[in-house]
Image (spheres, one colour):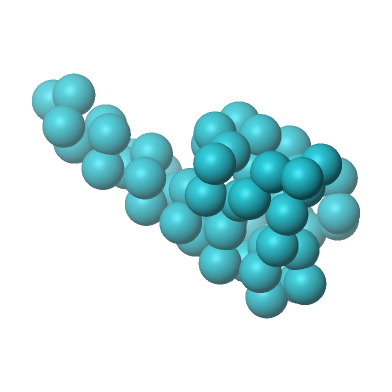
Length: 60
């Protein structure tokens, strides 16, 4: 089960990274997006006003 959770987190991170890159964000405070946690990416995603719920997934 933990492998499934890890995969879900990684997939969500990649989705957010892709969306941030599409919006022109490549680094945040001298930190590459790939170095950031899911929580950090979600916070930045919300901060820049990206709120398209269609990219958010529910994992069961």
